[in-house]
Image 1 (cartoon, rainbow, N blue to C red):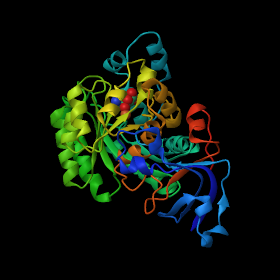
Image 2 (image 1 turned 30 degrees about the vertical axis):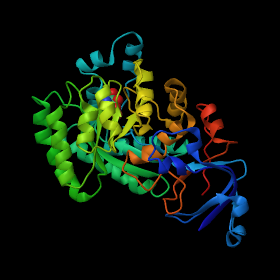
Image 3 (image 1 turned 90 degrees about the vertical axis):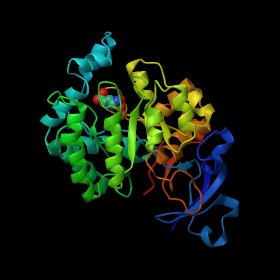
Image 4 (image 1 turned 60 degrees about the vertical axis):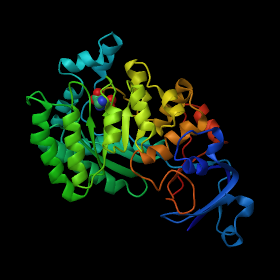
Length: 403
Ligand code: NIG
Ligand code: FE
């Protein structure tokens, strides 16, 4: 059992949790000043003001004066395992060539596919490990990692196993979620997405499922990538195998992705730059989280997702980094959240909940994201006067590890 007391701000999010992460006001942060918390390795046992800390806990309590303790920061969307880089494409984009044009002539995801296939298993393991260490150094404790740059049976299999190895090595300090995203792009050697699904994506999922290492599947539901039939097939297969689904939806075009995602019970629909009003209406009546990845729009110089509309409608909104070598080479979800707060005009509860409670929900982690008795004892600790100081000093690393 561990006990912390005199915490400047204990950001419990208890009210946000009671409201299912929707329609949040700043008060829903439910901050306890000069707070204390008692927990064991699994769950929270007591939360309150230091002055109310029961007598039997007083002696063992460690002071965290000058610190903020919040539900664990989660990066619920990364593509952190890949070979090579795309710095050249970045420069081309600055010179006016579009992301779509680069992809059309064989760059983009397919270039990273070649670089990933050229990399050895050990290289991929080492580089992904370094990236995860960096992400964790910002105070992020739960990190989703997607496969998806192998794009053939053998390499995708290898990527899923490497993510699993990392998951076991980083646990319990950092929790890694292993998302299977062989349906990220269609290699040019296949006639169609349907053929690639039938020959690679579905058979490999059938092979991986019994190993019990895959936490979710994901697919790039997008014009010229994967269509309605592919997405439905993946979700139905995954469901039969007991694995939940997530999707990249309505990023480059409005493809009714949000509507399809909600219908299929997707944990989250991610990107949503082009989501329609009808899509917003469907999401608001579902448990599917709208995960915004504003770093991608910033990096590609595209208009942002309609965050305000989503929030005002009562949709559950998360923010994630989308860390990848092409469309968003940024590994710091706290920085992304700080910038997006101002750009999206999200209040502080919506912003913080977006990278804690709602981000956990986007990964199916329903017992995480609020400092409530009985919930998981996963939290982040920052050396800062208050929560607002963290978001306000954007890009600064306030994280401290107490182990
Ligand atoms: O989420 N949209 C699809 N996948 C990535 C982009 C990956 C890349 O450009 O390498 C994304 O933005
Ligand atoms: Fe992505």
